[in-house]
Length: 485
Image 1 (cartoon, helix red, strand yellow):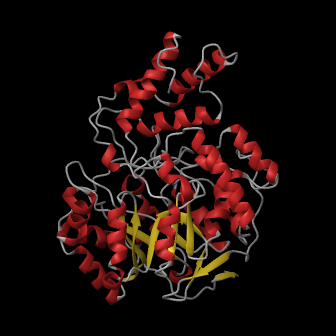
Image 2 (image 1 turned 90 degrees about the horizontal axis):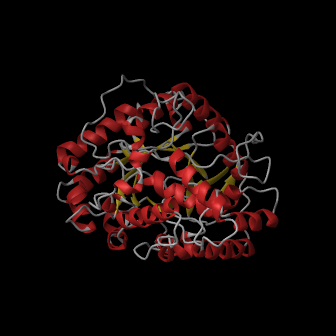
Image 3 (image 1 turned 90 degrees about the vertical axis):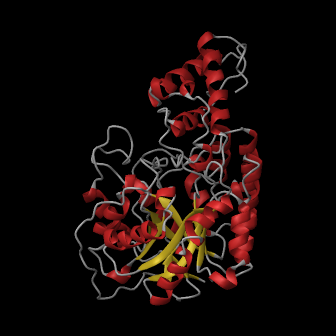
């Protein structure tokens, strides 16, 4: 059910608790995500620019069928918070999270109708929940819904005691007595010699944690229980096949106009979003959407495709097309966006205040764009940094992101006879050294494969590192051999 109105407020205030040291054995290290491309809602050019002021009181809401609460179609992802040096927190040479800016942006979001805030113990080097708790505790408790996760990725956190401690710590860091939306985090991932199902059972079944969380739901400490899916479809199918037992209140999936029909084309081990959504829809389970922009890739398309979309409607940005698509399915409860800067927030508020759903013709237009994206042969990296840290210091997402960026900007050359070869060669090599320090480039990969099991997109990272490095070496030596990257 869609509603376009301002979310009502109440008079209950949250409690303020002192900070507690973050649970040590998370197992994700410095895993953070890079900020997506900054976009402007005043122009069709997806570059940084002055953002139009979004209207107040026009946010589109969806109804939670269980609680009948109104949830803003735009959800605030607290994975990409700003640092005090003006960069996304977690990048090299940053200082600390800019709490004042986080507070300002959360205040602005709530003022403009956003009420769903998504975080995790793993985000921002373990500091996202704390920063989110500070920002939200300044508001009345039922002005907002908090979603967080049991992010017990590391075997060190698979014990019942460690997992319960992680859950209890989330309550303290977020300064709340209950969690509105609690997720089993990233089910479907494997771990070296263990299958995805074995990992799932170790994290949630063998230690009794799923039973514990269901008990917390019965007590009201968890209001809605669900899971986020990455990886092996067998685990997804198993959990939905047991929906009568677990009674999932919501499920978080990756959905965008590329992954709808072409996720498997991009990587044969992935599952198309069309299937994931249909399985939720036929069971009446609300879907929370992640990666509507594919880590910013759909806001930074290859130039020919960007021109085609902008020609269709010069007043809309590339990002707004992708966000409208993600919100145009009736079972979608909210669409998450990691909004590092105020420009991100304003752009998305413009798109969803109110949401103008795509027509069937507009969806077909985007599917045509998606088919062309597949032909550009980009690597399906969303820059989530779940593969990090690399034991050999490689900036894996930095390498893959630079490669994809060069495809988008037509700086990937495969023919020395091309009249544009010299320019593209220089742009790739200079840009590579500027964006990825030399000691962190692909040539330092030894193929250990530790990163592969942690990648939600199931990219064969060592193979891609070798391919990109061969291409770089061919460019440096100015030879044809290796230019088939």
